[in-house]
Length: 178
Image (cartoon, rainbow, N blue to C red; front, top):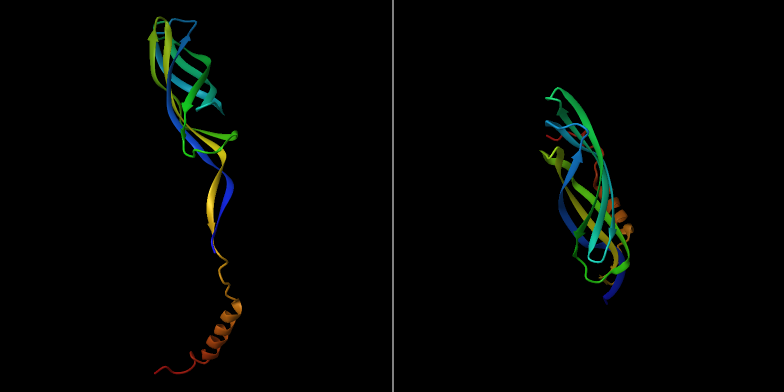
């Protein structure tokens, strides 16, 4: 007779993904004539569950290499950038224990400078990156437990091996086949 049992397990209960874009304005001590390069360094972040989403907070260092004084001198402007974004999640499991969840957040595309402009003697940098989040919670699954399957003893196999060993001719290679 088969039985159905409930098992409590941890599973992915919500998922979400978002491409994050924002513009950061950087002021420099010298009037900017051209931007020579832009990098995002030392990115770190953390995530926590809110009501219907996951809140991602992070910080990174923005480095901008620029020229000034008729493009005859260069400098690097550095600025720490904080961000906070909400990523909506879609429920994959309707019933789960929501008070004790774990969050897994991954950066699918690291932050990069996608556009840089000089506007009103400041540098405007558009930063783009992509984040994926998963909410892990306790849920129940139902499984069918089958009756115990009859076991086959290895003794039968040993008997078969003995029969095969009796049929082996140890002088086979020495005898002429022709």
